[in-house]
Each structure stands twice: as structure tokens, then as C-alpha cells.
Length: 161
Image (tube, rainbow, N blue to C red; front, side):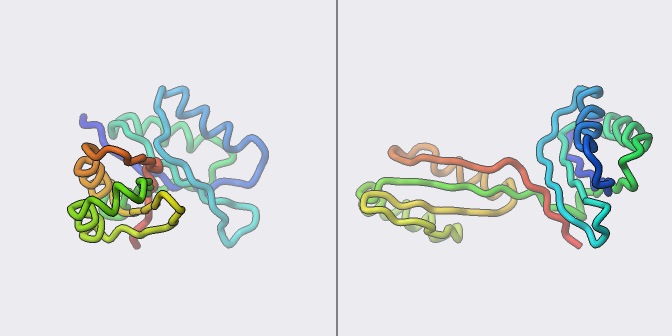
């Protein structure tokens, strides 16, 4: 079975050690969590935990079956790829002198809808958010440049419906 990104939505009880119990299941199955986000729901006694893992379908099914046995887990939804977009945030920092001298870089950045987020007296910082493929393609185009610092977030799942 092929390895791919799976995103799980877990509706969990707001109790101490809930997150520990859940992450222990992933540890038991030797599966690393690519991203994890926690948010409130309408019910103050419940939270929504969104977890993305890179694994195969059989392993996800095993993990979900274990998670269903936990008292702290109210409900689990496995999102299929058409229901989720995987995004990243990338930050690029370059010294202003190099940026001003490089017209092709300026054109490349403007062509990718990149935002300038900070100007210093000798540097400029740009940001780009988008799907993983967009960020990776841009990073590949920029990697040969000198004087460029680069930082990106982990993969962040965004529900589409």
C-alpha cells in the first residue's frame, strides 16, 4: 500500500492527559505526526483535534481502531484528499542590496503573489502561503540564490468544505 498524507479529525473531551493518550497511540504504531492543531468547538466540553500523518491506509485504520477505544475520543472523521488541502507558509529574507540588483528575482517574486512583510534598513522579508506543491516549486527556483535565508512551516491541513 502506498504512503500518503492522511488527515484525521478527532472530537475529544476537554480533560487532562487527553492529548497524551492520543499521541501514545501514534507512538505505539511508530507513526510520526506531520501536523497537529487543536481548536474549540461549540461545546465547551469538547475540542477538535486535526492530525495529519504520512503513512499507509492499513496503518491509519489500525490507529483509528485504537483511538476509538479511548474514552476521551468522542468521534473520528478521516478526511479524504478532496476534502483537505495541505498548505505551508514560507518566509524569505534577503539583503536589500542583492534584491535591488536582481530584476529576475523581483519578477519571480511578483509572479508568485509573494507579499513583502517587513523592510529593514538593509533587508527585506517576503512571505508566501499556499499548497505544498506551490511552495516546493518556488523553493526550488530560489535555492540557487546567494544571500537568501529561507524558513517554512510544517504542513498545515485546511478543510475545504
